[in-house]
Structure formats: C-alpha cells, structure tokens
Image 1 (tube, rainbow, N blue to C red):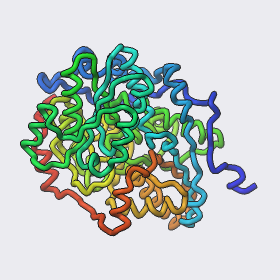
Image 2: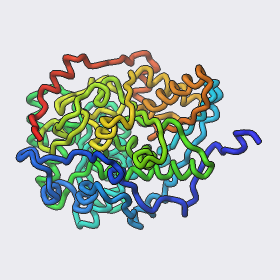
Image 3: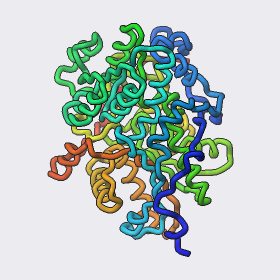
Image 4: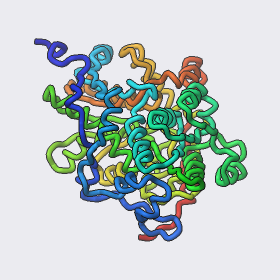
Length: 459
C-alpha cells in the first residue's frame, strides 16, 4: 500500500471527535508569563481593574495560569460546528513539486466567511459579552480578519460592533471593510479624530498610516467611555491563545488518528494568536517532558519583534492607556512601513509565547515580504488555495525546511498553519504581480529609537 493510499489528502475529524475543552498551556509552564501591570501603579492588574475594560469571564481566563482545561460552552460548540472541524491537509502536490522526502501537512482555517482562524476567539468573546448583558464591544483590526470575524460573531448574537481599522489597511482593503459593514459593524480608520488618543496621535504623527497599537488605544477609549461596552482583542492576550487552542487540539487529534508525529511545527507570528493556538497542545507535551518538537515562529522582517525586539515590559498600545505586558517588543511607538502587505503589524508578541521563546522552547525567524509572496504564489499554483499574506510567512519557511530535507535526505514531518485565504488581499498580490512590491527592513537605529521609549519597570 502506498503512502498516498494510507494517508488521505484531507484528514477530517467526526463531529463527535471535536474538542469539548480549550487547553491552557500556561498550566504546564514552569516559568509563568509575567503578569500584566497597571500603568499607573506598576503593580499587577487585579480582576476588578481589568473588568473595566474586558468581560468578567474573559478576565478570569486571562488571569488563570493553573487550570489546564476550560469547558467550551455548548452555544460556542454549536457555532463551531458551522465551520469546524477544519481539515488537516497532506500537501502531496507541494511535496512532489519540491521533490522533497519531507511530509508536509497544513491545518486550513479559511473555511468560513471571515477567511481566517480569528472566528474561533471572536465567537467566544462575543458570547461572554452577551452573557454579561452588554450592549456591544469595540476592537481594532489590522488586515481586517479579526474585525470581520468579530462582526460576524456580533451579528449572530445581536451585539453592537465597533471596529477601528488600521488606516493603511482601511484604504488598501475596501472589500474587507465592506464585509464588516455588511455584518453590521461600524468601521473607523485609525488613527481617527473620534477619540482623544486618536487626535493626539494625529497631531504627533501627521499623515501616519496607523498601526495596531494606535487602533488598540482608540478601541479601548471607546469602550471605557460608553456604558454597556467592553473591549475585545483578537490576539496577544492569553485568553485569545486559550480559545485558539481548538486549532492545535484538532490538529493533534487528526495526526493521532494515523499515528503521525510531527518533527517541525510552523506558524506565522504577529501577536501570537494562531501560532499559540496551533502549538499549544504539542508544547504542553514538550513542557511535561513527554515529547520533543521543533517549533518555528515566522514573522515579517519589517516588524520583527521576536528576532530583533527586546524582552521587557511595554505598553500594549501606542496611546499608552492599556496595561503593561512583559513581551518581546519593538516599542509601543513602532509603526511598520506602509508597504508592509500583511496583518502581522503588532509591535509586540504574546507574553506566553515571549516567555516560551525566552526559555528556548521555540525558535523564531523573520522573512522579507517579496520572498513571502513568491512562496504564496507558488503554493497557490500547486495546492490550489490562494493563501493570506500572513499565512504565507509560514508557507515560506515550511518550503525552506522541506528543501533542507531534500538536501539531507531526511524524511521529516512538517506541519504548518494555513490561517486563512487571501481573497481580500488582492491589492497586495497586484503589487507583487506588477513588480511594485519592495522589501523594507527597519534599521537598528529605527528600532533603538522606538525602544528608547520603553517604560522603566523595576521588579
């Protein structure tokens, strides 16, 4: 029997095999992520303080680093069933085209209208807001996947949704913006003149194309200044990684069905939501000493928080109104170049992933966007899926690792996260196809200037 006959192209779980709980990787971490700090007192944030910004149940999840599993409410399970379980795909065509002995699998998260994995946490956060009796939520979005996902979740549950979209993405991705509006969301380009912090940023950086840090500041102000609203975030926070663990749990269950053990697990990294979700159950095994894997975080060379940032406490937003988080950061004032085509625009990395990276439990590499789009185009022509620019960072490194296997003759098993589709990213693809895309790498001076504004925290 050939390998093709033994392992199907797409491995699906049955509905009854879907995870009923989320996994909290912090429970197995010996070195826990450092706590969020109050920017005024520099003391750990309390549940009461966080409750002014986030939903109560989400605050509990954010602060709990000992409970390994959280039950997924039935209503969220039922929503998941509309597009989950998502397939784990064996990339036979890509393997053949690369002429590699490596076995390549990808977990495809684009089987929903939002086109990405973001819906996994959006429905959870909207659900807890609804359960609390809130009127609505505010958020930020970069490339638009998170804003789209949250607008879908809020429409499903009857909540008001207000999205601050990074200005350059607002202008470059009008169709993503219109999907959000179709689902009833109010979408504002950020920075804007609708908030105090937005006006301050515009005055300090006239003509700025914006950043996630700017949009976060505006969304937090909008939530805390309105009765019956809370702020929700699509990445970075530990509660988000918890919800996204559904990706890794499904991936592991699908691999276990065929007794497959991956050697390398790869994910793109912006704030950390999809990477953390994909690797969590595998990382748990490694933390418990049960297995050993090679984890690779792939970030853009234009926004390289892990590979060139500093591990320190920093503001989570440009307006410096959010709690301080200890993370690998480029500085809260860092604004990626406007020619950055993907959504991986955040200045810092999840505290959970930052701690794991600092503990040498995972690797990180940065890649330039022209090489990313070269890999994306090749993947689209071979595997038949047009990948999102963010996902294509993982594709690029997965292909690189497969070619290394060709050189050495090693039959390694590679798994990567295909976080979503690129059908709303055609402006970026157009620039690449026209030869107008360029690479931007910040200089050491650029990064040092941004890092010079880090807050002084002596703990």
